[in-house]
Image (cartoon, rainbow, N blue to C red; front, side, top):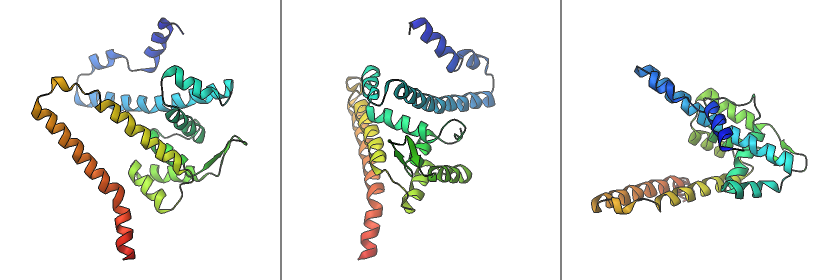
Length: 213
């Protein structure tokens, strides 16, 4: 695809900067923010649909080659494709995040041989999240309580790769432009996040041990 064609497509699927120039009041700016978030959401689905088409045309083995060419993790691409297959067009609510759908997709297993999902529990969970305005954390907690996850490996890999990306960002911080006290503040912030994350992950294990004791 030529640069000119890419630019033309980009203008169609992104917000026109002139909308921001014309925005004059608070409500208009809120509206633009909301629309930009919806575009982000739609782009997640669009990428998943692209990947599904790649495999449909070039076969299952093509995803690894595609990942290399676009310099993305194969795991991330598999998650995007899985979620798009789990919730085809017409089954997607824009007031839920893509992560809601990814989590819900893990309540049904995908049968590669049959090229279809085994069961429809994912639709039940996404309706629950939609009707009750659940956050992704609440959805995950409810699914966990019901012991409904059938593919724990996908969930682990998703978060593991996300943390790895965050790690890569941190290792490219422009440290030479930071004062000593600013470096210390960033370190303390990171340590605080780590501590809260540790407590969050371990709190259920501690609770169960106390219950047994």
